[in-house]
Image (cartoon, rainbow, N blue to C red; front, side, top):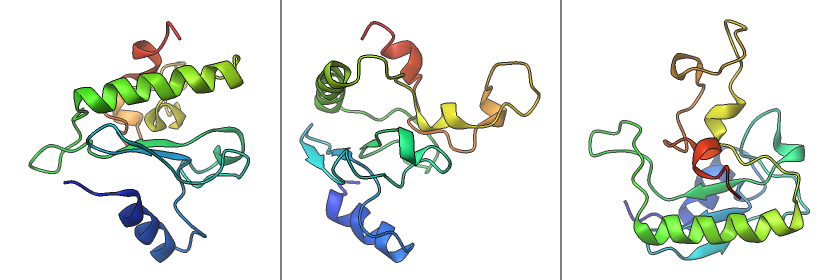
Length: 132
């Protein structure tokens, strides 16, 4: 669905947030929209908001509402560009997805799909961006 940052802002305000919880939202056409200023604590991954930058892309679900990497080529290019820019500002930051913040329930040191609190971003961000 072609949602925009205004939609996310409305949803987040309905949940009691001050404004959109993400610092950046990438639209279907690849446009990067700023949400919160990165100096502000986000509201995107409970327990880790104070030390992370939240990036959201529109999509992530298939036609049946199941998690799926639905990024357009434009979104992929914009996300890569944005992450490059942020890497320059924060060279020691780890690039990962929301699902990577899930607890390791069985304590084996690996967060497996059955342990994910959320599936987003619906692709392996750690692996995809390891070269940045």
